[in-house]
Amino acid sequence: MVDTALHITVVCALAPGQVVEAQVDVSQGACVADALRACSAMPSFAGADLLALDSGVWGALAPHTQLLADGDRLELYRPLTVDPKVARRTRFTRQGAGRAGLFTKKRAGAKAGY
Image (tube, rainbow, N blue to C red; front, side, top):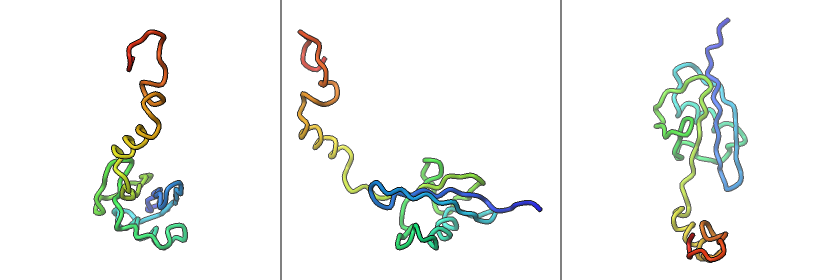
């Protein structure tokens, strides 16, 4: 007998530091939305509105209508709470210019920033 189910890995970080990974079997011709509906019944995804999150397959954004292939990794992305540029500037300000990035180590007699 030929196995016609697609084996999909679904990965989601529902909260910071909390990564949930689950294996889902869906039928041939299933799309991203079908896999998300199958996941929503699992206890590890309880209470999460998976269809409201952005999704991607192997790191590339994918619409909910995209067809899946056997062995695909379906990733769910939470919305950002802080702009990464703003967070970096805040960290840099808090740490000070003397202890961050290029300015960490200075050679004796070198110009500032080198």
